[in-house]
Image (cartoon, rainbow, N blue to C red; front, side, top):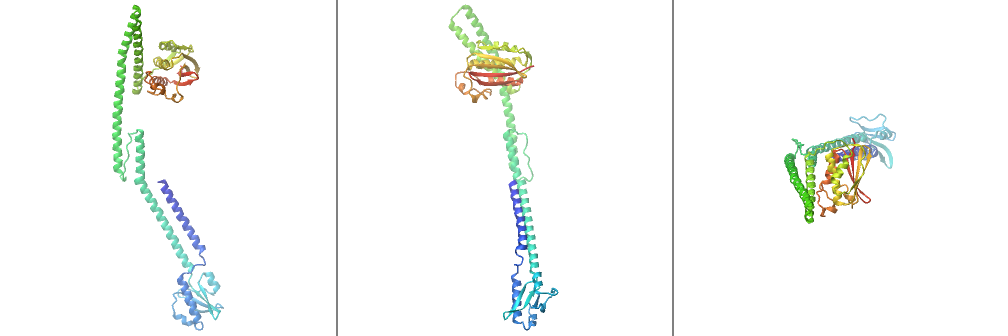
Length: 434
């Protein structure tokens, strides 16, 4: 609509420029060249009759030429005049007639100029009146056009464009998920039926979204409840396997049985880890994943590593003698998930180093495996994401381990930074200092 008003403004400017140009041209360009056909005919008739009756000009008094006139001889003496309501200028002459703008013609008889006929009609004055009338008419037409175009544009804008813009903005808000703001309706809106339908659609979508959110919450609560309930039988299986392993070792029974028991134990551990990750992820979705930080000595990290390094692959430096502000249980979950990932995908030794970096204890956990493709580095901590290399492999995983680790670090005001190294893969944990 802005372009429309610009177009109207341009047309208005052209009208004004055209009117001014006409006024200037009509004033100066035609001056001295304007003589109406009627005046020309009157002047020619009068001059012709004067030549014919030059010896007795009184004959012309009885004729009506439709105008007032003066006939002069070459000495500017008035021979005949008809002035009516007009008054001939005192001491009128051809020179004065020319200056005054009166039409004139010489009377030629026997190839000699005998006198001059002057019409007492100011054609320039009449032309000026006509010219001014034309200018005023053009100006009025310009004003009427501009006003009409402006009013028409305003009507179109208010009755069509603005309602469309509101519906467009409304559709954008609906697309963004904002379903709480109603679509306003005007009495003069010719799209009132559409507007009402759009608002009804918004209300239906809002109700549908609420039902969907409630259903998703119930589903997550169900998953969390089942995950929690599965912990008990899994713990029972692990304890039973440990008891059977102990008895088998004690009785020196068949090593094949021990292998089967070890396999059951590993599978139980995998199930336990998956259930734990699923339970943690579901709590995060429900907003119930609580983290309570407190000051702890950095040496707790050593105990956490020993807890999860059941293959003795981790070689760790001694942590600095500082206090860290963490939730020990959640930090244990973070480190456990990272070590478990290295066990699963690298199966190499793992080096752990520490250093103080500003307000953080930097803990770097590095393995010497194949690493992660560079285009996947920013994705590996996404929920349920597994690298393309491992998605179709036999390695089991849920894609939740690093997601939970990153989430927990952020909740503890820290950070998790994955990176490829020259000969492996490393994850750096920035653990807040006290």
